[in-house]
Image (cartoon, rainbow, N blue to C red):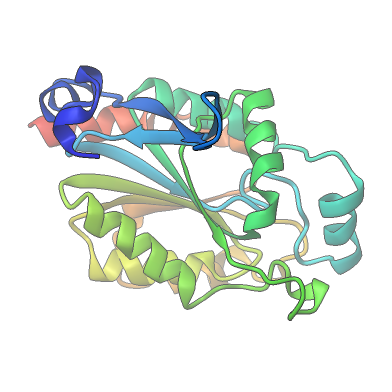
Length: 250
């Protein structure tokens, strides 16, 4: 489809004048039928602005990756639950104009359930970049193994697609998010605005050990937290997108 065939609300001019961008429902058409079935949503994002790249498991959704039995129960037996306060924090950032990209080691087969969870709790919708998982060729316990190679590539692909946007990276300490995000911030300091790492129960590293991961980065460029309420009560974090947007205008 050529750009000229797209609706006016997703034209280059319309997006340039928008803070939030817009979405377009995508339908598949059966050549034997005149009816269409929706298969997804396309997100059109302005060239300039703030985007949030976030992990999912133990960042947004309670999975308990560090506890194998609990991880399996939380994935296959229990109703998905949101980490307390993350819905409020992300909704606040979305209201301030942030776009969202969800990059996770979660297998792509869970995307419909994750989408439903986000809708139920009012979490901002965005692009999903989940892990390819062939259940026929892998052990079930490898479902959430850290993707230290694919995750950085995916994040860099998103940043390359929007070279004029700034990015807030959100993850947790259960796996390799601190190391991955710190490496990206060192290589792309002009694009990474802030890093947020949620310290999860069961992670044996103390705050000092985790802080060593960010050695060489400005102290004001990363934050470790346990409770989202600590971020929501601090205007510096609750309004990080608005403050970043103002800095970009200046």
